[in-house]
Image 1 (tube, chains in turn cyan, brown):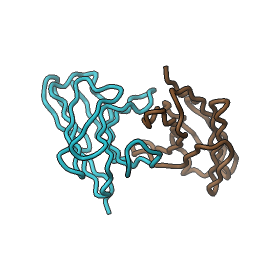
Image 2 (image 1 turned 30 degrees about the vertical axis):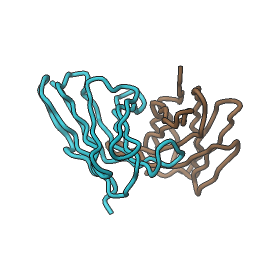
Image 3 (image 1 turned 180 degrees about the vertical axis):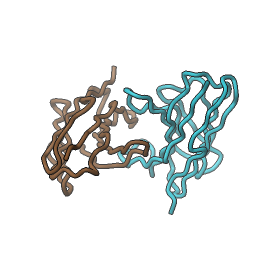
Image 4 (image 1 turned 90 degrees about the vertical axis):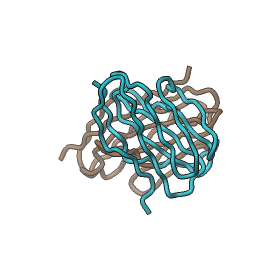
Length: 114
Length: 109
């Protein structure tokens, strides 16, 4: 069982370009999340999805969009990347939304926007 | 506002005991998590507390005081592999996790 996979592992991107970070889980979890992690700051929630077909905004959603067409996949799109979006991005999932269930994290994508 | 405070960095000696503190202020509270994150890797779950008191799990224990908005993670018999960042996160009234910046633990031989 792979758990959660993310692609790419790392990426260098020119400012203004569009980029989609992929996330797939095989645990049949209902809830999925996208976080960014920056040095000196805690994980910050970008967007989340409580179940397939629904999405919601987190703490820092501006400049990002998500979709949840099915249970397994939760891609994150940067429509027009800016240098402040340089970060490590983690996808996570949990069995149930709005609960105390543990979140399981993917290996992360290190994104550099120049 | 919502806030999680934990020390930025701590150093301890192999074989010793270390306590990593965390204070939180959240709108509502549905429990507190500790995660471990090795450099360049994903966070992994260590513990969850929702009731006051100490939960022991092998070499790791976690304590919660809801009235004080305080938790700590206790690591015993430290091993070199325990060198990592330890993330404290509180679950607020909307069941969203509010994360601390993490405590980098350095273990010296």
